[in-house]
Structure formats: structure tokens, C-alpha cells
Length: 391
Image (cartoon, rainbow, N blue to C red; front, side):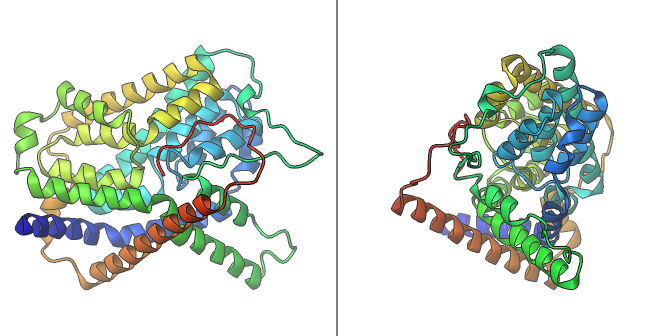
């Protein structure tokens, strides 16, 4: 038993060392994008039921560092600000499927080819879903009933208070650009940089720490217990592999970043790159909470189109990827054997990353403790939103 645990921890640490430098860099970029990309200001360009509006929404969401739960209040804000049903759906697909943090760790664990394929596939999936919703669900564009916010005494509309999304919502408020005319001065830039660093290295880790831990430990577990070539022999590629991956990915929550080491470990054990791509696309964009929100805010017909689009595009692209012989996908286990011991800088980055994760877990625990000790005395939000099950 002790030997198995040691092997498991060794594999987990090796995956962490390979991914950590890119993750630390990716979360830094995520903080910068969060501060300098004015999401709500571009909503005015997403209101028309056109391909251009859908494409803009997909491009807007692709680099943003939001998971499939924390993207919900942002998408709701876009919808309230006038974004069309199709544009909102495109944003809901592209944002959790990819991001600067997940692209960086994809490059580290799966190589440059998959690092390019993943965001391109996410954009194609998002544009397909949004375009079909605009085309096949021709309801008159209006703010859904779920988004009709009521105010009392001329106050400000209440925001959703899902515990899992709280860090993203809090960071969104704290990351507003300074209103002073001196926001471009050194002091203003320093203030923005401070907000970016806090969002990337504190708020995001509070939001994602538990899922990063689960993702890396699952990757280490797969590497430790699954024999070499097992999946290639018993599952391999084709429809069976795609269906098995979809059965796992569709109902359960897995964020884009934490899904990457799992996919790398599965490829190392023989799963085809195409089936792994299906997992990377379908997992982050579809889970029970997201499906409930899409159904409530965009309608049941849009929900059906949303799911069919994601599944169809993911499987089609997965089959195409498997048709390419000798696709250079760098999987975790092979990377460790080919390149030897990780460099000292990778080990330092892994230690830094581990400390950030531990700090995120501590912040998550403190947040839960505060919410338990101090009942929420605020008015109940009038935004209809499902209970979040990812805390």
C-alpha cells in the first residue's frame, strides 16, 4: 500500500512539474486579461442576430479565465446588456472550453499541435452553437424572465450569489478600471497590475484550487494504475472511445485547466488524441448546472441545440484528428521519459504553484467558514439561477 501511494504521488508530482511553469504564466495572463478586457462594454456589439455577433462573442470568451460555473453570471450580464441568444450561447461555450491558462498547460502537457487545435475547436464549437440557435430558435429577442432584476427603493439590482462563483464576481467588481483621469499614470497602472495579480494568483485559485488538486491527482492515479497500452488495446479510437468519453464528460463538472493533465495521462495510456480532444471540449462546456442555466435563460429549444452542437462538433473533430497518422501529441508519461528529470526552474515553479493552490484551498475554507458562521442577511436575489454544486 505504501509503495502504491508513493508511486501515485511521484507520478502526480511529475505531472505538476511539467505543467507548473506554464500554469503560473497562464494565470498571470488571465489576471491581465480580466482587468484590461472590458467584457460588459462590448455587449452592445453582440445584440444583433448575425454571424458577426456570434463570432465576436466566441472570440471574446476564448481567452477569458472563467470556468463553466463562474462564466454564468458574466453571460447573464451580457444577456442583460443586450447580447442575442446566439451570442450568449457562443460565449457560454467558448469561455469554459479554453482560456489562456488552459492553453498554456495544454502546450506543456500535450504539445503545440493540441495547444492550437484546442482553442480552434472551441471557437468552431461556439460559433456552431450560437449560429444554429440564432437560426433555429427564432424567438423575438428580449431579456428572459430569469434576468428581469427587481430593485427596491431605486437600489441596484442584486447579483447572483452562488458560492462557487463568488470569487469571480468579487474580482469582477474589484477589477474595474480606475475612474480617475490618471488611470494611465504609473500609479494607476500599478493599481491595475495589483488587481490583476490578485485575481490571477488569489481569486482564481480560490475558485479552482480544489479542481486543480482533483485533476492532477487523477492524472497521477491514471499514470500509476493503468498499464501502458491498456486503453489502446481495449478502447483505442473511434466511436466507442468517443461515446465512453462523452458519457463521462457530459454530466460532470471539470474545468478546462484541470481536465488537461487527465487527458494527457489518458493519452499516455493509449487513448486516442481525438477521444482526448472530445473530453477537453465536452467536459468544461457541459454539466448539469450549465444546462439548467441555458434552459432557463435561453429556452429549452436552445438548450437542445446547444448540446447537439457541442457533441457533434467535438466528435467530428475528434474523428478527424484520429485520421491524421502520427499526430505529434506529447503525453505526460512519454515526456517524462524522453526529457529526463525536470529542470530546477520547473521544480521551483511547481513549489510556487503548490503554495498558490494551498493558499486557494485556505481561502476556500475561510469563505465557507464565514458563510456558515454568518447567515446571509442580504435580500434574496431575484435572478433565477440553479444551485451550484461545485463548491
